[in-house]
Length: 136
Image (tube, rainbow, N blue to C red; front, top):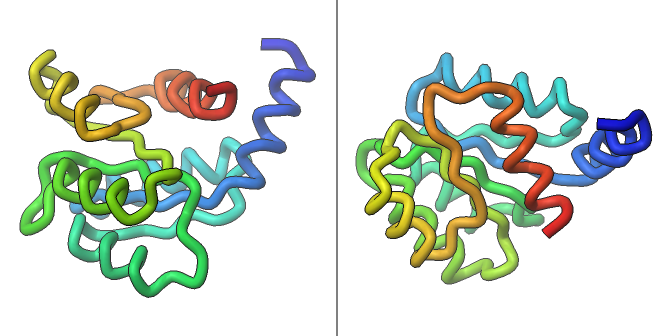
């Protein structure tokens, strides 16, 4: 990646608001930290899908991008995806999950997911998914 591409990506990241939805607190903190390290200024944490929906419904401003685990108690990532896209069709949604079966990926795509990252993930795979959103 060129220096200009790096700069464009960092600038784009700074202008995005993120919500990280993950029921494992250490993973949630890691994901938020990675996003901040990539230039994100606003990262809203949510402990599960129900918490995310409550925060989306009470927010003054809906985040630009939700990055969510799939397997969570109560409201899972797929239910969150459906509900969030139903209310906020322009919301970008990345599923970050250990569910890597092709049928799961296809199901998420039919529900409108914009990106899919398999766990365990790398910073590079996160950057690649975000760049697709940036250019797409």
